[in-house]
Length: 163
Length: 317
Image (cartoon, rainbow over all chains, first blue to last red; front, side, top):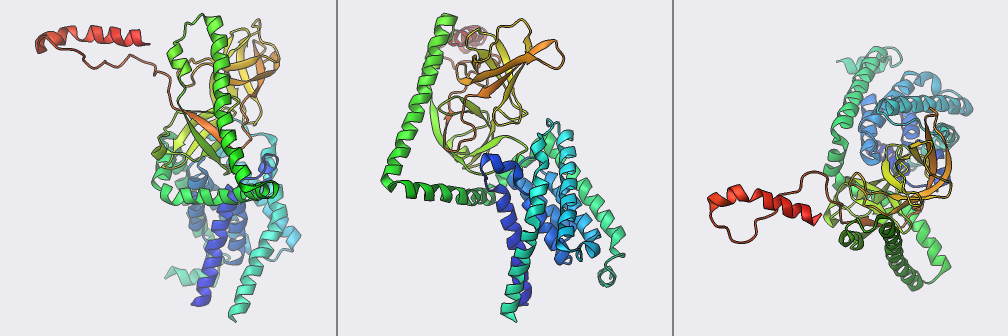
């Protein structure tokens, strides 16, 4: 019971932290490089704890992000739902990839996410984004191993403490 | 029950159900987006959720603020910093007033005091600070730490010491969001201060570039010209600096010229801004003035009242 609860708090905490990171400002020059944190955290949890994540949950996280970010209600919900679906579908394979291969898969996922975003933006009538729009998935790929190891480490430590 | 069965073979049994669910959620997201795009639901939802949302903004801005505070703590004494801030606020106000005065003086000579000086000189402003939060690269927006409770309302003009920054597009109880003039969806009516040519400056999405489009090829625009608000359209009062022309060339169609401009306001900086309180007079017929003075009889007033009220309103403009 207790262990379940700790896991739940790590899960919720990581998602809240990812939303905060999304809002956190960076210097002007680095802003286009900011990885899409909620996506990275959701990928982690879909890979490691598929019983906890679902498309519906990703949808809700996306709605929360939309509420905070305030561009278009439902935009991130759509992106994160699609992302989680893909990860859950290919979970069996992705999970046992070596880290570099996994990072590449994350890159493809994030690029796909950007394409979805671009489609939504163009439908909403926004102008075409600058080329720096495509940089964020690459920094996300670089950040992925660290996110993965960090959450994994926190989980392992807490588990060891309880045991 | 279906659930235990699913868990027994998670790879294949889930596939069809998962796809259906995905389609359901994607459709739901699309419906939400369309509704939001049409009705501005997001804003209402955010206003309703502001109790939860506003602290998150403050919390997210905290690390940036802490870093800045740490830096100032290392470079100088606390009270010196405070004094500096007060002075900066005062300077900001003074500089904004000065800019305003310059523009007014220039306009007065050129337009021979056609404009109402009473409205031009009185400038009612409210000082506010930017909240250091990244609202995503999609829109050029900034968050301001004053909201509906502080009297901010949608459409107010935001300026800094150097020129126009943008306008308020969304108001929460203690926070508001301003759209910057560089946003791709923002346009501002401008006038070339040297030649008096009018145009519309569009944002490009880049933080340091505006585009004044559809200028006649023969028009008198040069690199280095300063552009300021023209006051047309009724949203931005006339005479605030908007930017400096950096490039003039033909537009893609070749029928018109197009000028690039650098915004005058310091849009990348985080600090204090001014919100203009006095809105320019709204476009449209004047409101009926309240009745003044004794009335002869209710029957007579009905027929004679409206023309004088209209005349009064017109003379006020």
